[in-house]
Amino acid sequence: MASAVPAMLAELRERYVDQLIAGDAADAQRLIGEALRVVPVATVYHALLAESLYEIGRRWARGEVTVAEEHLATGICEVILPDLAVRLPRSPRFRRTVIVACAPGELHALGSRIVADFLEAAGWDILHLGALTPADALAELVVARGADVVAMSATTSERLPEAEQACARLRQLPFSPLIVAGGQAFAGEREALGIGADVFVRSPEALCSALAERFPVGE
Ligand code: B12
Image (cartoon, rainbow, N blue to C red; front, side, top):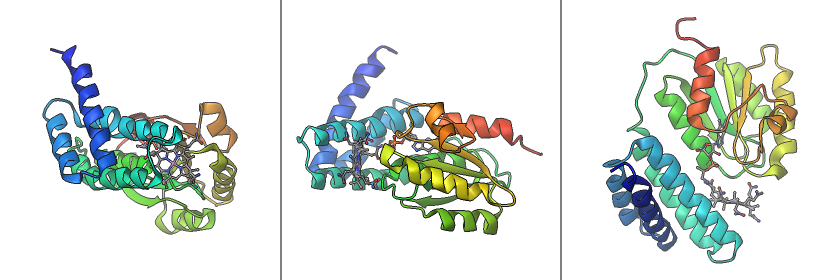
């Protein structure tokens, strides 16, 4: 039975990619519902939704998918994300704040939305700023809301110099937040620490674990 799951997921992913490119939002939502009946919600996020967008990116790079089709696909995934978020296992709130932001100049925002949704379910208060977050605005919000953590997302390596400037701006604050970097722009920890982040993790789950260690409940 367990060995049937990868094959089933591959088949669902193929259909989902086709639906995203065709712009079939209702069919795509039905397919996600089908997947949720057989695999955990985290698998739907990673093995279905994210992997399908990676596949669309590869096809776009090969000239098999147009920019308009890529936009259609992103739009449908944006609609589906709230349906997934409400299904994440939830922990009680503990009144600590994470700001989730894309690096300045970074337009890829779906990954940061997913990170925000996982953290919210894990009990964090979330301020999700999304794409193109200017460094000064980010720093101002950290101070105004007393944020404990900034989770910064970068997808393309072109954005790393701006991400570095944003980290430097946060370091000038009297109480610098913990800065966690993640996203496809970082090949590994070296790049992330190199731009001035304190911590690098790849996945939303790893981020929740890393923060749970650093901010134990009740302290
Ligand atoms: C949709 C899309 C767009 C949309 C984005 C819309 C939106 N609202 O987000 C638009 C059309 C704007 C776009 C623009 C561009 N794009 Co684009 N895009 C994509 C595509 C197809 C999907 C992105 C996505 O949502 N992925 C799914 C999410 C869920 O995955 P994720 O971001 O990796 O996030 C996961 C993890 O990385 C992690 N994570 C992410 N952030 C963080 C942060 C922390 C703290 C942590 C812990 C974890 C974490 O958690 C997430 C969930 O697991 C990708 C393909 C790809 N490989 O992703 C190309 C892709 C990223 N784009 C690419 C390019 C080239 C561009 C453009 C430069 C094109 C152009 N010439 O204009 C511009 C750049 C714009 C800019 N300034 O940023 C290339 C990048 C190549 C490279 N390595 O540099 C890709 C890889 C396509 C390709 N195969 O060539 N794009």
